[in-house]
Amino acid sequence: MDASGYDGASFIPEFYDHVVPYASRQDVAFYVEAACQSGRPVLELGCGTRRVLVPTARAGIEIVGLDASEGMLEACRRRLRAEPLDVQRRATVQRGDMRDFELGRAFRVVTIPFRPFQHLVTVPEQLACLSAVRRHLERDGRLVFDIFNPSIHRLAKPADGDETDEEPPFTLPDGRAVIRRHRFLERDLIKQVNTSELVYYVTHPDGRQERLVHRLQMRCIFRFEAEHLLARAGFTVEHVYADFSRAPYGSQYPGELIFVARLVAPVQEFGR
Ligand SMILES: C[S@@+](CC[C@H](N)C(=O)[O-])C[C@H]1O[C@@H](n2cnc3c(N)ncnc32)[C@H](O)[C@@H]1O
View 1 (cartoon, rainbow, N blue to C red):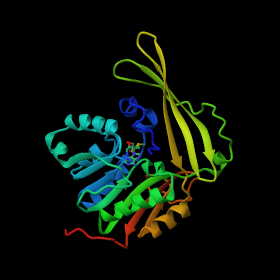
View 2: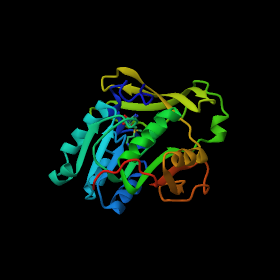
View 3: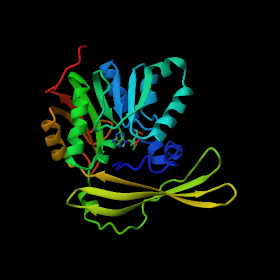
View 4: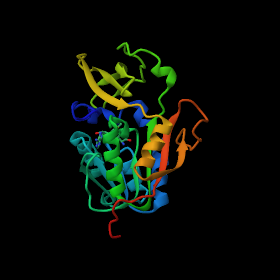
């Protein structure tokens, strides 16, 4: 089952790059630096439309992007075709599920930018992903990823289905004006899974109105839970940050939950 909803709503790849909180997210330099520090090919899981992938290739690092959504990948390929040839050569993308993939090669760094890991809503799915990551990491390789830090204050509020969090509006290249709102449909406090909708109110240049919905599920993962999960999957946590300028976890609340984890128990090594 696809908890992320990215393949169920065909308008998302077209809108994604214009959504203001995505376009202004301050994580790109952090992931590009992680790639550059390794100096070697990087694997990005859930690469989406290219937000991190293209800047990494522009910085001179070979990167392989994997994503489950053909629509997101098609948008990514279109973006790549507009890049200079050397950048295009450094970036390849392919469709795949981060819970079960086999690329036949190992990387120095695997990244999962902007929370795709939270679309894995059960522990077996999380472990399947970490196991696939482990198969694709060199000895001492790093897994770098971020999730949101679940706010206890927010969890305490009932999911009443009200639309909240109005964001800055944006305009698509063809003149459609878009306002996006968010609403929680359900907060399963036992399974730690939020079901919510991102609702796009679109006004066409001729005045026609449209309401488009992206429904998705995300698992809340707490800091120590993630650390236990990583240890169980053969990783040791090197850093936990609260933001992308590397402020330590605990310096703000809720902040982000950003992990740099090192592989300590490779299951299988590729001959490189
Ligand atoms: C919030 S977007 C992040 C995209 C990109 N990493 C970025 O930073 O902009 C989440 C992405 O994860 C992908 N995704 C969700 N579940 C996945 C899975 N099981 N395997 C691979 N990709 C997945 C979605 O298709 C979507 O492109």
